[in-house]
Amino acid sequence: MNEPERVRYGSVSLVRQGEHKFFSLTLPTEMLAQTCFVSTRDEDVIKGFQRALDEKRAREIANYIDSGLGTIPSSIILSAQEDAELKYDAKTKSLSFKNIRSRF
Image 1 (cartoon, rainbow, N blue to C red):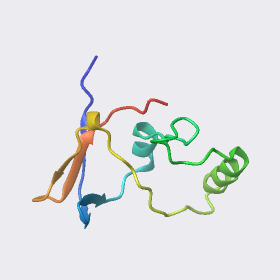
Image 2 (image 1 turned 60 degrees about the vertical axis):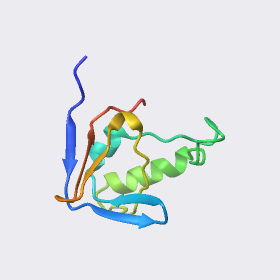
Image 3 (image 1 turned 45 degrees about the horizontal axis):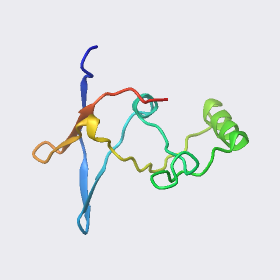
C-alpha cells in the first residue's frame, strides 16, 4: 500500500487559548470530503459530539448549495488524528498533513 501524500496549505494563523493551540485556514471542500468524518454521540458517548443527522434538513441544505444560489460560509472545527501527522511551520505559516482517506 502506498504512503499517503502530504498536503500543505499556507496562510495559516496560529491561535492560542490558554494551553490549547488552534489553526485557522481555508481548505477546499473536496479535501474535507476526502479526509474528514463525524463522530456522533450515538456512536461514542465519551468522544462523540455531533448530534444525530437530520436527513431532511441535510437534503434541504444540499439542494440549496447544489442549486448554485449560494454557499454557507461558516467555520468548522476539526480535530487532527495522530496518523495525519499534522505539522505547523511557523516560518512559512503553513500547515501540512497526510492525505488519509476518511473511514466513511
